[in-house]
Length: 208
Image 1 (tube, rainbow, N blue to C red):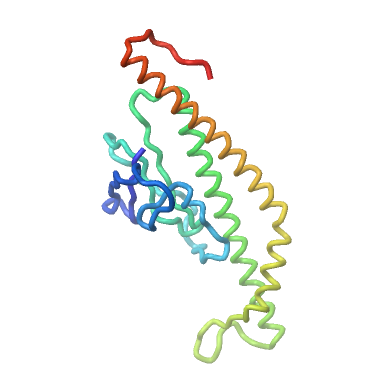
Image 2 (cartoon, rainbow, N blue to C red):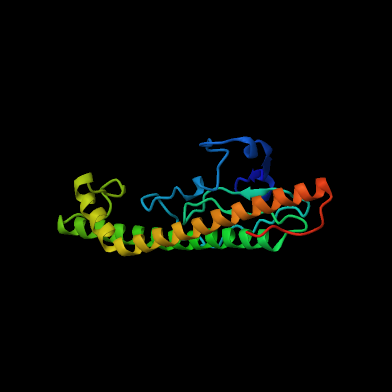
């Protein structure tokens, strides 16, 4: 399935048919679904923005998946999956699980990144107060801690969220294993259907 990419608003959505023919890592402008997971809590987030996903709706005659720019809170690229004409129940099951996984992933990293930045800001302020310093210097610039001081916070945050991250990874791998199996079943059924149409076999589906 070829995918299309948009940038920010409706007018900037665009197609990229060559995505379906490429393998391996993709450049930034040709992002894959796997690349959309490359999110780090250390990336800045805009906490004042809404956590809602993009409300963009592709044209009714679109035959592609659509990928958008990274969300300001989760840092993940939203994906809108194409609903094919005459979608089978198995294809619907796969598409629904993939979309649910995207939404689940987005919600997790939105909450995680907001928590990370709030706790980081609180830590920096507490350390500055211990030094008798204000949040900003004489020129109005925000003060920062050095890498060794921040390492204390990073270790503490990772330790505090160790179980949470472990549970996330388990659920993530479980979801992707199920998605992979469903993709294999869909591919097998499509091959069987194509062979049946070419050879004039009676309608039916193989046992999987």
